[in-house]
Amino acid sequence: MERERFSSRLGLILATVGFAVGVGNFWRFPYITGVYGGGVFLAFYIVMVLLIGIPLLVAEMTLGKAAQKSPVGAYRVLSPGKPWYLNGYIHMIAAILIISYTLPIYAWIIHYFYKTLLGTFAGMGAAEIGAHFDGLIGNPGHVIFLAIINLVLTLAVVLRKLQKGVERIAKILLPFLLLLIVILIIRGLTLPGAMEGVSFYLKPDFSVFTGEAALAAIGQVFFSVGIVMAAAFVFGSYMKKEDSAQLIPNGILIALADTLAAFLAGFMIFPAVFAFGLEPSAGPGLVFVTMPNVFNLMPAGIFWGTIFYLGFYIAAFTSAVAVWEAMIAFFGDEFNFTRTKSALITLVLVVIIGFSSIISMELFEFIDYLENNFFLVFGALFMTIFVGWVWGIDNFSREAAVKKESTKKLWAFLLKFLAPIIIIVLALNLFGIV
Image (cartoon, rainbow, N blue to C red):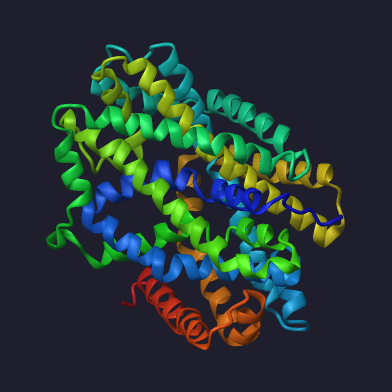
């Protein structure tokens, strides 16, 4: 299959930002931040983005650009005859899992969008809203129906070529999403008591910070920035060879944009939650259980709630489309399949795993655990070892147009030592060793 290209640097940046900004920012980041103490978690998260998020994202894009292949083929090209290509399969497994097991979340968002639009939650108490979410989870047939709608919309985009599909949808939807977020933040900050939420979110309380919180922040960096999920790898491969000087600036910009989106998501939620005396550590149900209560107590709550879930879906949708693009590139590179055939094979895999996750929440939680605690962690570890110690900092620097010796030494420190050490500590903790 002929390799596609982005029409411009802006197209690459927006498409990759669209991939990174999604469920991890608007579903996972706020509730994880609430669980682990607010401002102190936010501060440590930002530090981890700078120390390992940016280096790993740049490394992943650089590998893709150097080989002009999706992950499996790239490792084969860059380390021929060696088993490093097996890590390419970890990238692809992580990619198919992320767009499959999160399928219920896309369906839930659609459900809450139209239910909010119809005013279903108006007048409901907290217990009724909680029961509504439980009822939604317990109605897999309805959730599957909504998931099918989501898949139809996704296919309508990914079956088009890169510049007409992923790139165009990112250029249109991301600026609109930013506008929606800003509107909701301004509205939330005008509520009485909102400043208490701002204090919780921005003022670090180091007395509540734990080792578990630190590790949760590192895991959230992988999930949110999209490390090892193949899309950044493939988007790097869509860059032109002569665009080396753009690699590091692009990676930094993309990671910072994703972090900004997560930061704004928290700003959108916590002031409103505190304004109405709700629980910031509500867990995974923060968006789907807590927020309807908030909107019920807001003037024009139906309008603001509808806008919120529309923005949430836009963020999730652009991420899914980007990962589908990575899967299509993989099947094209490895088997020379057409875009249509690659998309249909991806669809079959997504349906099998995703519908199973809808039917069984235990499976949903198990795959979530595997994705975040094994595939992303070990995929990132093997990738940074490969770049730092096997492919080498000289090759990385040449491909990423690193000219200054001092800058080269900085990247060597980050990729050869700091990132692997942090990830190894995380892995050891997962196994209960530290």
